[in-house]
Image (tube, rainbow, N blue to C red; front, top):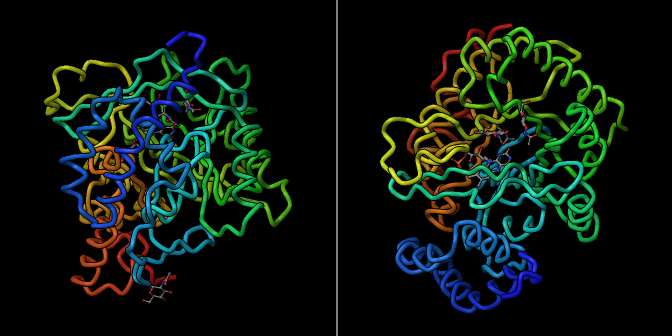
Length: 400
Ligand SMILES: Cc1cc2nc3c(=O)[nH]c(=O)nc-3n(C[C@H](O)[C@H](O)[C@H](O)COP(=O)(O)O)c2cc1C
Ligand SMILES: *[C@@H]1O[C@H](CO)[C@@H](O)[C@H](O)[C@H]1NC(C)=O
Ligand SMILES: *[C@@H]1O[C@H](CO)[C@@H](O)[C@H](O)[C@H]1NC(C)=O
Ligand SMILES: CC(=O)N[C@H]1CO[C@H](CO)[C@@H](O)[C@@H]1O
């Protein structure tokens, strides 16, 4: 292939060539709700592709809604109210999968209760050099250092506006805001994001994911967070009432407990108050239990199974420290039990990414079915009743 052929065009033709087979397999495995079939036949075929090509192919499949609708109908027990919106189920797709807002409807069809688009940066940027995505098969994990490749605000906004305004669309969509690598003023990048996406997003996410910026003391970090949040919150508050989306903070699992306490103290103040948290982003740590010798030394953020327990523990910490603020729990969820653990630790909703790669699209339905069973077994009528069940709250619900 000539180098004039852009990467996107190559993916497009690759997708067209391989979709015949892939699409049929995937469709078949969904129709039969048959995860073994996906694991034995579809996944190995997908593994032949470079990880990034496989990801692009999957987004392509979602974009063109090539998967049939999952046959599972969300029961009332899975309904949750989050930030004034009703989710038909609490399982969302995490940021980084549909970075450019191309696959919202396909993902909803797959059974997700909500979709988080992004991270989106103001100007388009290419991200890091390839390779930048590594599969740690033995660990059911991924290391990525995409470096926030983004098509930029304008293009992503147009796509979302198409979905949201053109047809009646009542799905819940969040937008994860990023900053440009060469930004002179990061806070301004997030403010731009708030202004651009406020009326197409049900919630917005800013991150303070990178811990320990070299050279900054804890006090300086805290001051930086205050400055950032003050501007972001002010920008949101200036918007007209019908377009004032809640703002969530996405946290790094690598924050120390002192840093976490600082964050909570900041968000308690009125002018830097956020509406909830996403816990957690990928980790830069490498647990010594990792088995994949081949890739574990690659730089980047680690996601998937090795992140599970640290993320659940952090959810409980945030729930306790904030006296029950809204949390979306994410990190290493592979089944209904994993989702239930995060809900009992204080998450009102959850998200997945890495398990979708390893288990295929049927994992969404599997998580939902198992969650329904677990709630029923413990006598809960719905998800909300189980939120925070494992956490001691300083201020019990019934006291004033
Ligand atoms: C390939 C890849 C790209 C990601 N890109 C982003 C991103 O752009 N913004 C973001 O906030 N999180 C990003 N994440 C983090 C996920 O949203 C999520 O927090 C993390 O993967 C943990 O969930 P999981 O274990 O279910 O994958 C990315 C994760 C992966 C695996
Ligand atoms: C969950 O059940 C409780 C009753 O226990 C009810 O008050 C609440 O409205 C239900 N939540 C949703 C979202 O249906
Ligand atoms: C998430 O964590 C990675 C490192 O693990 C970091 O590079 C990135 O900036 C963080 N934030 C987001 C939004 O992904
Ligand atoms: C996508 C994005 O903007 N990520 C940022 C998250 O926050 C840290 C610290 O503020 C930045 O270094 C990242 O670039």
